[in-house]
Amino acid sequence: MIHPDTELRYIDEEIGYGVFATRKIPKGTIAWARDRFDLEFRPEEVSRMDPIHASLISKFAYRNRDGHFILCWDFGRYFNHSFNSNCLSTGYDFELATRDIEEGEELTDDYGYLNLQTPFKAREENTGRKYVYPDDLPRYYKKWDAVIEACLPLMLKVKQPLLPLISSSDLNEIKETIEGRREMRSILTHYYKEPEKALSFNSISLRDTNTV
Image (cartoon, rainbow, N blue to C red):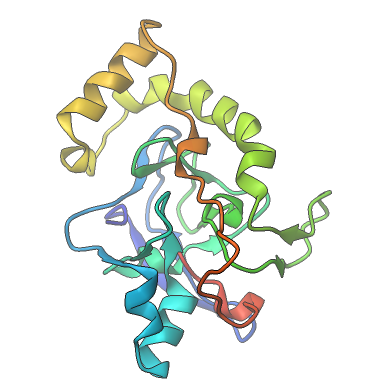
């Protein structure tokens, strides 16, 4: 589920739509959390789909640690990619705002941790990274973990409309992490290593990469 203080807006012909803040979303806020309405499909299910539905999975779904395709039911699936994203996935099933997101600002992800099946060249952002690759997660997880760990304490200090979606066990684990009683669960736990023989879609263009 996407944070309630957001809306869907058209960006341009190349990108399509994106998610924008309708009021300030403070650093440490849960920007998105997986909920019971999000759909999960096994690769074999997708392989049996008609072309119309299979293309929607290719365009909007991300893959979890089991290689299953997760299709968000709301417009959280329209999160666009940025190498300087203002949201990051945690080792749990939610994303945090890693800096203050101002009213009118687009919410963005780094697609490097979404287990994409094929690389794609992202829009130029004057960064060292130009492409997103399927194995970006094991390359960059330490950097992403450090960012999340720095803003995790704020999670319990800001207004959290989506907090009821976080399980009590995960919340207790997060509190223990903040108190220094356990290590933070790494984003690397979400990594799915593609087997040699796997379902494959056609290359994903920039326009077709709106996903959570």
